[in-house]
Image 1: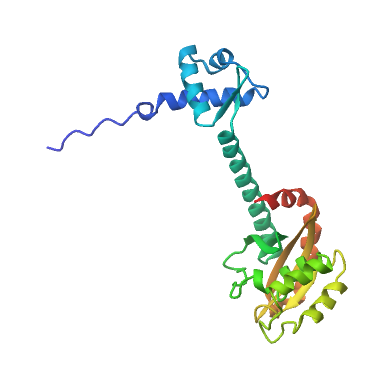
Image 2: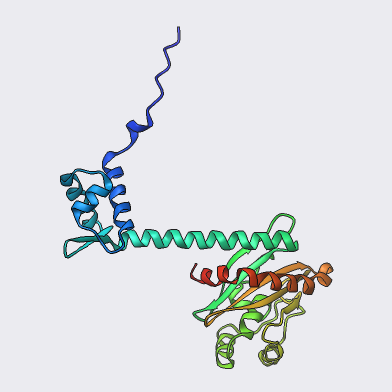
Length: 259
């Protein structure tokens, strides 16, 4: 005869009461932006004063709270948690936005910025039907060859461009890649301020790319798309479609530079 089944475990029995009470205190402090004394926080959290004192001291010791003139405020540890959560939310929002444009336009979408002297691809939205270009040569080192890099470099001053190309010299990636630095610099000078940058097979054979400039404060940014070269006639119309969409959500992309 089989043994009787064990009764289902009560979830409440697995909870740690002290953690729950500490969380209620943190929430109470967060709701009082100008700080609050222990007695007020104990009332807000529904705790006995001795219990609240004990937990508040522990939270201060661990850096989740700080105490000034008898008032408790959120500490650096709690603020780091909040900052991390906000950053993850921004990253998720940008990913969702790029995925929407990928599906609307029917092409993979790339978002990149130029900061600290480097090309930084922050997010790529692709799919099995619209795969991204394979990074077979480091994007940071081959900015002269792809639309993302050319668009970012076109937004820099002459000195910053030359500094970048001194660190990452122009080299042939494919038979279609620009041949030397001066030719590239002349090309970058001719690009209009809000004009899409287009390259065909300069970075990857069989692929054409277009990038549009985005400036957030003093940081150069770009959104780009790629298509098989046999669909190159779609490239500029798709880039202009993306450019029209960007204005609606520019704030989302601007704050995402911190991700």
